[in-house]
Structure formats: structure tokens, C-alpha cells
Length: 156
Image (cartoon, rainbow, N blue to C red; front, side):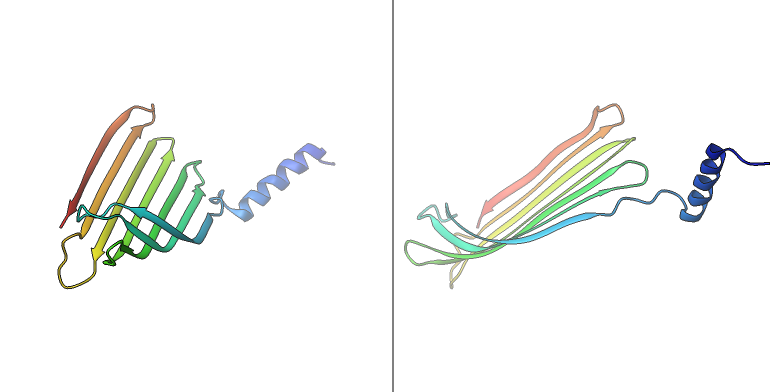
């Protein structure tokens, strides 16, 4: 008795599935790059603008899971140094991270930003700090169930 070709194909597919096991998540894709930057912005001392130069490091990750959900992450780190027109030196350290997770049950997104500007020297008027957190949650119907912003920025 000979099996029909479609039955053999179905049997082969079942055997292959048994050997390979359940579906595995897709491989994560990651991007990492460093970029030099230069910009001029305000100082916390209320005086002269500051020109800062440094490096921006960006990392991005995208991944899908076996259930069809998506997971994305993004972050940047900034390290820079600069001066104002009077020659006062500053250091800038900044970081942002973002996470986005979505699936059949809904989605969440959180973004956090933290920056520190430090005036160099004996006295420190002109230092600045910023911290911001943003968050959003949606249920499976796309309805927003949580949404908040929390932030502060101070000049010291």
C-alpha cells in the first residue's frame, strides 16, 4: 500500500515540527552606533550660551516573540564638554531609555530621560539636572489604562 504524496508531506511536517520543537522567537536585531555632536544651548546661570561637543552613543533593539508580540528598546548616552563665552567649562552627561512592549493583551511604553550639566570650578552656580519619566499602557482593545508624566528640571 502506498501513501499519497500529501499524506507523506503532512507526516514529514509533523516529524520536522517534533524535531525542531515549538516556534522560537525571531532573532533580535540590534543597532549600536556612536556619533560626534556639537551644539549650543542655554546655561543654568542665565547668562551666556554654552557650546558643547562630545559623543552620542545610540543603541536600538527590535525583537519579536513566539506569540507574535514585539519588544523594542532604544537608548542613548551623551558625554560632552564645553565652554561659555567667558571660558567657564561644563560637562554634560545625558541618558535616555525607551521600552515598548506589545502583544495580544495590550501594550506598554516607558521613556526615561536624565541629564546633568555640571559647571567646572570652585563654585557651582549654573549646574543643572533634568529627570523625566513618561509612561503609557493600553489594554487589548487599544484603550489607555495608564498614562503619566513625571518630570523635574532644576538649576542649582
